[in-house]
Length: 110
Length: 408
Image (cartoon, rainbow over all chains, first blue to last red; front, side, top):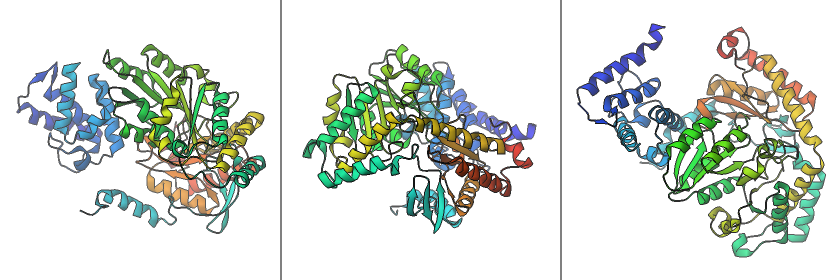
């Protein structure tokens, strides 16, 4: 059981380290770290090779994820943060950072 | 950069598919013999993937009506309704479809795809909110690309997921338009329409229901899921196609909205394409009469669905969630699905193969569509053939039971 879960956990820990050093502002109760952690949690199954998922990761290009799976992931994030991200907004999002920006912005408006 | 470079990934996948032998996306029917048989690769083949739910493509009365229309009115209209005018038969067809649904208005289109593309993108405009099921047909997704409205997806067949998204809109201005389908085309499952309608009423949302795969199949008189769930009056717009149960081509949109006719000068997929030719209009009008006059076709369709669904389930196949005129058979991955599909064609049975990204949740499927005029023998033969291939490919048997066990 441990070994099955290992990759996802490891990645989240790595990502935590990265985001914690960045000192990002808290918006409406959703810290940048929390948002990035949640995004990475949903992207973990699509990680390609050993390359860690970071803010610069281009979701459609650097990961093995198709457009439909991206939309499904967005739907999960919508429910987690209780926001809606319209499809035309999703179409403009390329990187993990951009997705986090959008989520934080929508959470602040909530 | 070459024009096709952006499709490099798809090209590669397509090449892989073709190396397995026949190209599943370019099958040639050398001769169609009946609603259930055709000559493919020189061999008589059983058709179980044509959406021909009532088998009306060869109905004598429909064929006679089409031939007579060609003789009296010619082969085509050579233009759009707004430019060239309507033939009397276009108007009569619209009256008959409206009457069938008990709605005041109807518009017919040249294809079902164009109905969704034009009607949805026109009804939901700038400042509005369009909410669609995640498993929606491509025509609905394409409408979303054309609309100026904000589009949000909700989880497939989950009214609570729709409700969360309507709630989040709060008091933001703009109409809420929700699009649902009677029967979903890949797995053959129906929407919990009544529950969806309750949510839509609570939030004042307009409802569009697409009965493409459910016309004829569902409801006491074949009007679709809106009839079988008793919510016709709550569906603001019902759309559908003439290309499946009615055995021709074209589509319709019905509504009670008093300003409905404004769609005739706003929906571009209606305005800027040639109207249906007389032969099609005639065969569709006749097919609608057949649907009304012969409810036994619906009974026979569902009996055949039960034969195929229960037969495949008993062999151990993992199927879509419920009985439906579309029976989706889950397979472990795209290459197995394509190999299975090819083996079936070699054995003289044609079904559809559906692989990502055309399928929900990345599943790989053999998509079978049942016809009222399939014989029990044809379907039982198919079940045996599929079980044999399933065992050969290791999809069935002890090994597979672990993989797909508890599927239903």
